[in-house]
Image 1: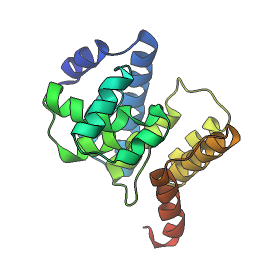
Image 2 (image 1 turned 90 degrees about the horizontal axis):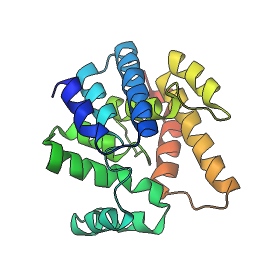
Image 3 (image 1 turned 180 degrees about the vertical axis):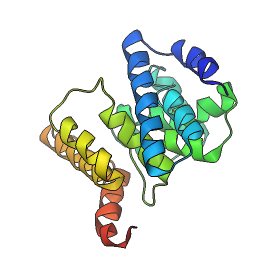
Length: 190
């Protein structure tokens, strides 16, 4: 799908602020993909559609998670996680994108997963460090992303986990598993 068409589709579902964020994620994902040898077109598409379901009603996302036999434990955790798996389903259904790599990058951009693909990592990190983001630790993550994508991802996950803990919120198990997988396999990466 052409970039202009994809952006047009997504814009209808986002606020102006979230649309600007999406463009920032797209531009960042393209840069990271170029830097780390990813498929730039897939990175562009996944980035454009990563927040496709962000503003869908919670009830709709709950129904999708239940009806599509997604992990039910998602519903026990913060609703901010839901737009990623629900979005992957809706992007396939409504936008006709069927590439499993793109859909997985959308599906896991909030939680991560053990054994993340390069595209998964690019979208997760691009979403975290895009230029419109301003929060403690983002500059360090941006600098790390220039040197080592996995290190930037580890920092993003660690910061997210600490943020949730400080707010006395539960941490989704896949996020902890992603962090552990990356840290435990740090020395096995090329």
